[in-house]
Length: 279
Image (cartoon, rainbow, N blue to C red; front, side):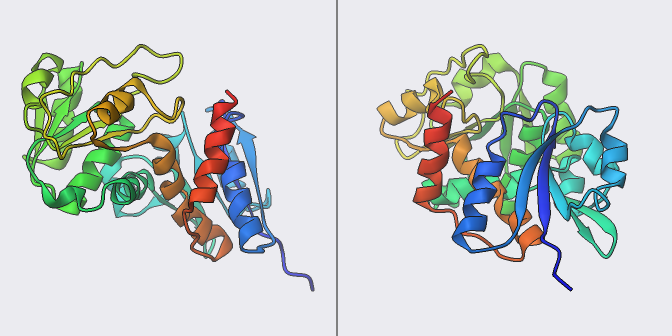
């Protein structure tokens, strides 16, 4: 009998813009693995039925993007990270059980480690902008790394307070107008909002008072260099962008589906960056 070729997909609505097929296709080719990865646009109404028939559709697992991450969490067996964040972005079948995790956590931390080694040696002045799903993943990653206090700044203060209720007293909720004072001497600023993304309102932040050794991260990857990152680089600060996070968050899924833990390389980054530049 011929062994079945493993297949995975990305589930979203819309999803046609996803770079995941190019990303996973690169790794499949590099490691000589017989496998496939494609896009499945699935409406929220059809999502539960699609997951329940994932195996019969020929898939060993999937990535999950907007707007399905919280539904994927509810419809699967989540690990500790997915439970902490309350959302899942990576699914795989294990003994007939649909397992899930949230690799946004390791994607964010992996990108930071690569862009700014030893970024976590400073525990003071850590600021996260945004308290949505991405913000939860970022905050959990910081706490998991051992950062004792994280300022969460959000236009809806109640959502920042909700993160404190989820993660405890290590979270310090703040109003948006408190940001200038928080930035004085700060060592890490993370934008987990869509502000600064192509087609979205700009993110206007003055970085002049941050520490000279500060790191600025932005989960946005279209454009690759957001105005926030350009401002940080103009000050000579280390930066981490959303494409780096995208690459590192993909590693665990590929390992589950295709049995090989892949490396994130400069060649892969340049391939995806060129693709994004076409937009």
